[in-house]
Image (cartoon, rainbow, N blue to C red; front, side):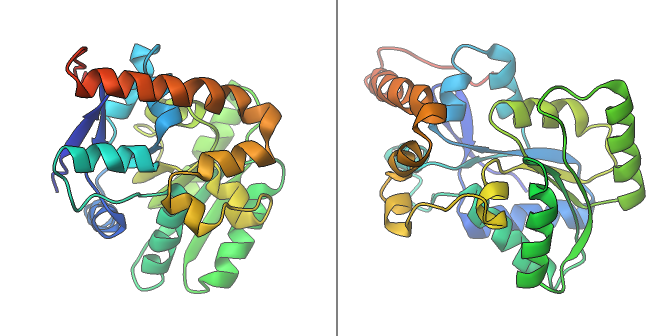
Length: 255
């Protein structure tokens, strides 16, 4: 299944909505097609501006879903009227619901202490027929060789179809690019804060804020110290760069 991409400051964002994203994931699971999926908004695109390796990771992903409304707006400007937001937490729920009626084994990697286990518990209660085959909570640092071996062995035994990764951007994308080719999982999907939202650790923004492009403001108000730099610096800079791209003042290549 070939998915078109729209160029957002040199990042190829997949032209998707929730239904087409689910169809692509279901097809990959059925065919055992290995790959990783990045769920990308303004933060990811801006991180890629000064990190060529990270930009390449996004552009070589099986899918790079439009996680934020600005990605959707860029798609519509380029004529992709069917493009909609494919938000990590919503994508996770869609896939879990689909997997109640289809063969799909899930493994959760990431989050603070106890979050992956709580997430598994909550999702199992919501989707009782889904198959959850393991969890792993990593330390807040790179894995050492012993921890890498432990993770590889857990994945080998569990044989998940989907390895869900709940780290922050760009940490989770770099992890997926490095580890997904050698882990015995079909798809690796980075969904970041979905671990905290669906485990109940952090409250999500109201739907109207999500749909109007204001979720960043809600999250900033709830975690100002952690997210101040991300939003107060990145958002205005993103707008300025997008204006330059749309006016033809600067061209960006998908590399």
